[in-house]
Image (cartoon, rainbow, N blue to C red; front, side, top):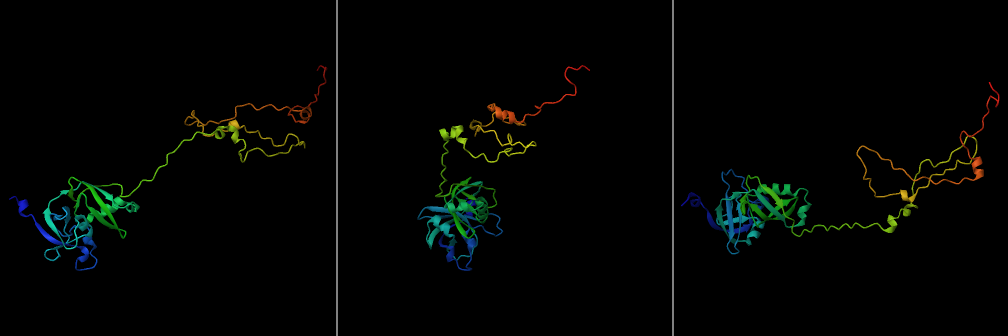
Length: 289
């Protein structure tokens, strides 16, 4: 027989959860994937099979401290195998390919509350020896247990993750619902919105050069503030300047001529007109020099 099959290990054990393990009360390390801290040249990996339910998984070994004929498994691993306390499990030594890719599905949307879930998972997988497609693993983070289902592994359905460079991906968590996006309806402007006259009554706020002044000659006429009225048609909203060029500033002014005001004769007489007075000449008219 080939040498690989001569050293193959296969036997049955009575399986119990970690809570039944005698010794120190805190054995949280056994609840992990079973990556041994011993200086072993080749990783010791095993295939666990529950023949009654035809369920199987893979694991490593942490310590050889159990009594003869007994093994202790993490609770989540017993759930994957559908094993009860004291149930029989078949243990076989195997060689697994090194993982290059794995995909997980969180079993609760609470996993998304973690700030960096990928980094948390990668840190937790350092304590695991192997992964099996279809298993639900459990990791402890911030005093809370998170369960994740192994959706896919490459290059095989069961892979070793000891000292490997593996890409990790996520599926949407179980029970997760994406937020509904409300469709944006582009409503056409109504007649009231499109009519420039609707802006006639709007508060224009501060307007420059609208104060009153004093004349040197003491007259009061012609000094009352009279700002030019704003034509509602000049107010345009939401119309871009399609002729804009980079580096050029365009000043938009009112190109419509202002209507001429009809001035009364009395008002015209009293209205001040620059350089309109009469002067005296030193030379008399008709006299030749």
